[in-house]
Image (tube, rainbow, N blue to C red):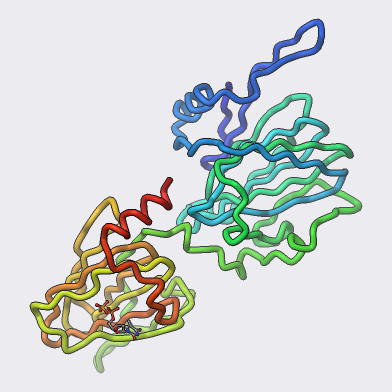
Length: 326
Ligand code: TYD
């Protein structure tokens, strides 16, 4: 199996040898060891097992997409056109990726039998270039309705150069898909991540001022703000994780230490300045210690208070984190 890298990181074109025979031809369309070897040699991460085959049939001009599923149901797809021809597109929807929002497209057809490898974190779409086009798609995860998301196929910010058609047929669902800028394109791709941010201080001789603005330095929509103060120095707080909630914590006065744990690595962050913000995405275990007498810990939160979102048992947290990674 030959692998060709594309202009988009982690997206690859794959080719299997076609053996001409007097009665036709044959090819080994999928061979996991050869597939893994090709990915490994190209420095690509190895995917989860491809567990499902999906077959799509389209008439000329039928466009499907752009679709993707959120973790833990995210899908990697190996796409081949087994009859006819199609233009197949992948869009990087990994929010922490340098190529976020960029796309790659290629024409696949039943003659070359070339395949496109689209791993988790990419939306994909395809349009049939002729009648009677059949797509064959191997995937690592089955369809999961609640995790299914879509993006507008002709979003000008993505700017896909689809082949010219007099008529495009799309499903109602795909037609009403949001633009990238309006999508709740989700931080679930950032699940389990944290970031310590330096906030811009606007200072003059009168003192200092820091502005917190949703979408600028707060990377989520704020539904709740709370603050913790008058905490005794020898008291520990927290000792929980959140399934969906994202938070940003700032010690607007005094200091405290926050232990953050993504299930694999545990580290301690010291918040001792009103200009330091700790962003904690969902599925981060946190413990707060050593509150100074004057500590006021301000927390901005993406959800209303909801006890069912809490994981208060560490073993349960580890169980849920490893479930999501399977
Ligand atoms: P808890 O989340 O356990 O605090 P910490 O993480 O600092 O240890 O919350 C303490 C109590 O306050 C608990 O009974 C739930 C309640 N609470 C609310 O009612 N609303 C809120 O927004 C928060 C954060 C807590």
